Image 1 (cartoon, rainbow, N blue to C red):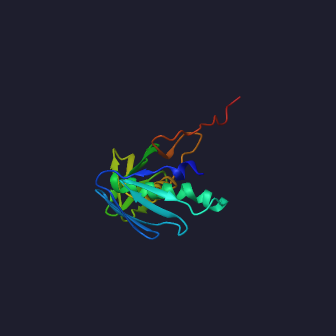
Image 2: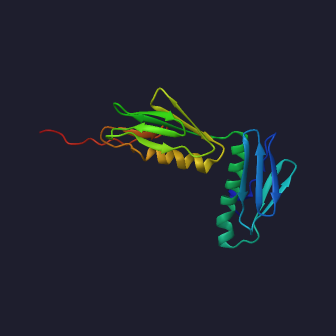
Image 3: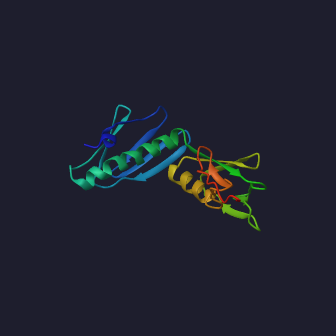
Length: 178
């Protein structure tokens, strides 16, 4: 039995989960999200907890059990608290600014790069170098943060680039003169 898939999901106060076959709709204080669950799995809701049941003990169902539960937990947490990723720009002259529905990043290229902000995400720029991305969809927040980071990934010699706040960049020594 899957250890993660078997754990029940507690519904926080103010969050409702509507189950219609394999379609789930979570509504909470931050908004609403929908999820299409694998049709083999059954989602049950009792007394403020949600349980994911798998139909058989086959290898394919065991592999998907924890994944399906994690997706359901992510939509519940998203409509209740939301998700947030923070990025930091390290380098002389590296800066970002929000311009309308785009994030303009100057990261050492001849021209600034514009990254379109997807619908449903909030982006804040503090002190021109700290970028905070927040939203209710975990997948969308993570994907956009990775797209922003890919504009200038941190390099190992001088450590310049765009990195996550808690990311550790392994530094290399480089050439030394004799």
